[in-house]
Length: 191
Image (cartoon, rainbow, N blue to C red; front, side, top):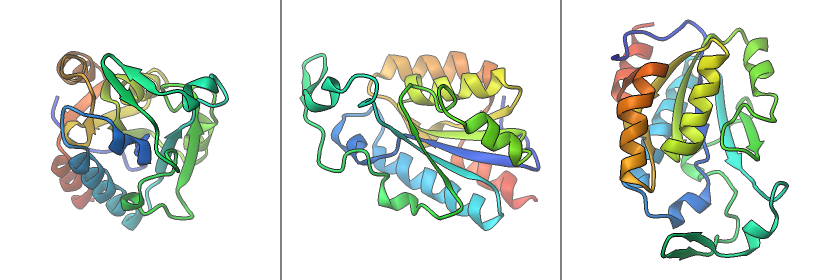
């Protein structure tokens, strides 16, 4: 389903675009994902719409995983210093909600649903990494909460091409409207 419209109060949810992301090999260049998410954040802020920036932090769940090399098949990666800081391109603002999450999705174990409800949000645009984990989990929860979900697929990526394709081609069309960053920017411009 293409991006036909956005609700009057739609929030942008940017999932896990933090320094560690630059360490991993994604199927699409992470630079484009960051640039597209940052462009959306600027436009949402300009229009007074809520922006939520999440950071993954598994230390409270499994602290040894942060200190040990991350094993992704043959890939061994040591997380850089300041790995959990948001990428500076997102230009976090005081009015943004910066949410630290310890699960895949942004809703589980956080106050995000209440924060959105307090602002009368009825729709969300979800971007970030990884598509089949944080982005999909957040989009599923948003849909289950009755929020209208929009997914600009050029503002997300995954380390596994098959997982990315499954989310984008099979799951997301059942959760909401899919399109590009430009589609979302065009809908915002129509307001």
